[in-house]
Image 1 (cartoon, rainbow, N blue to C red):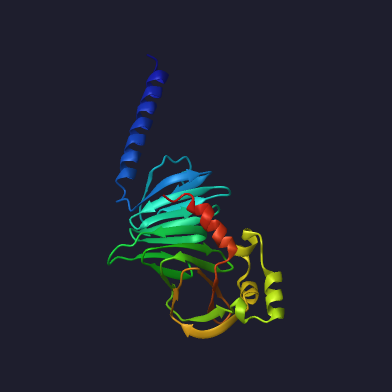
Image 2: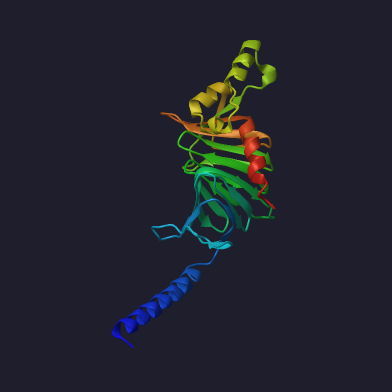
Length: 258
């Protein structure tokens, strides 16, 4: 056997050994607290402490604290955890923080949280923290604003830094004048991409929101949507009826839930 053949075999053995060791280390790197159960399109996972994401994933795929799940255009992912399931929409990034805590860093996610006696679940964005006790809700987070749409159950929303928010409530249609209602209708958006990316100040004007009080925590009721945005001087939250855009997303993403 020539020296080149021996070298090639040694290299192959070395690579196989390294692959086995890498997989063994990866499987023991932490205790899994969530699982990537289903994907469609290109979904990437960046493990805690790693720089580059894994692209060609085999599901189910274990997720540990510090792991990021990212979807690109026309992609979607289902994540199962101790509290229930999360469906991650396209162009979104979710970070696993703990067994009962997830962070939507950008994009849209639909949460289905099972009610557990004496236990709660926390979802958050860079701006807000959402305390959950058995519910279905949708979160949209982008540079313009954060939205929380509650379909059933109860959630409590606070700022990440714990400061008060200026609480506004949208004027009910029954209380609008004819001119206000006509303006409201003209400002309505039919395309959900425009609706969920609309700048916060424009959204506040569209809903004809009226200031009520400064609050530290907001208990959102089913069928309502809380939209949060930061102005130069304060953080403001508008409580309004759920936008049809989020109703559509609830149906679309909800089709992936068990």
